[in-house]
Length: 231
Image (cartoon, rainbow, N blue to C red; front, side, top):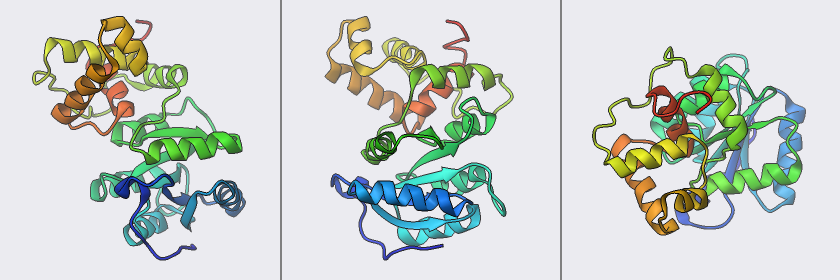
């Protein structure tokens, strides 16, 4: 495990470049990701080889973004994600996986991970994804995310929040369309609203339902039946 001294992170200070912790049990993958990110001006503050090291490193280094492998010895990425987000809700976790349609990825999204990347991601996509979630947004490829949630949102997993009664009818409509993968621009066009109004509705939905981002909103929309496979 390697790391550098902690400083205030980008997502917590509003600066452009997030501070990143790389977690993977393969040293070559960690080294490759570090090289890619540092070459693009992104600060890699540490590395960890398993979930136990990851939880400890996040506590000490306070990164903005954690690149988290799923299958690791000692503690897997799902449990490490659960522990990290329980302690540091403003931290963003991007799951690293070999297969996009993976039940473990779904479980991580339900826990609050901000998205996932395939390990064969291109260098530019990796850097862009880290910067995106570092701003507090979620990384969602709508087609893949919908296929993932449709496959695994069977009611067997515990929902993030099933009580939708705090939402207004308009907010329910927005949540439904979020679950179908619509962007803010598409939401605005469909509902004949300004993008600013759409963003306000989304912020209120997240606050009322204690959701971190769009990834959890998609999972919730399926788990509660607002969106069904094929709809």
